[in-house]
Image 1 (cartoon, rainbow, N blue to C red):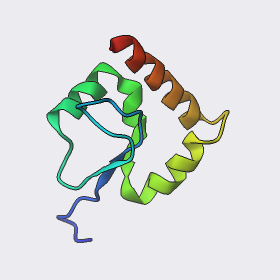
Image 2 (spheres, rainbow, N blue to C red):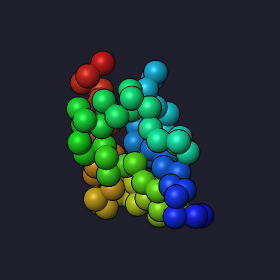
Image 3 (cartoon, rainbow, N blue to C red):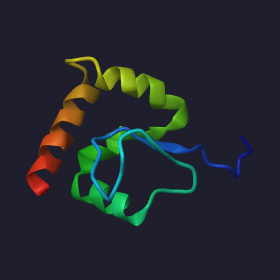
Image 4 (spheres, one colour):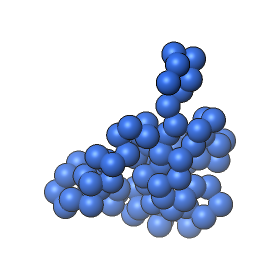
Length: 83
């Protein structure tokens, strides 16, 4: 990857219909709708990571008791109340 090329980002948060699907890879920045979701739910920013960190974050999300698991549950709960 050249210095001018940014690494793709992966959204590992809960799926939000019409905004973002869990584990979606963004290669050219993130859409405005997802940016708005991240602004409204700052904890969700921890679930948007460079592709190189995707596998590790997925494992942490699936492991009860980890910070990533707790954040995922919080964001999922917050999004459920927004619907």
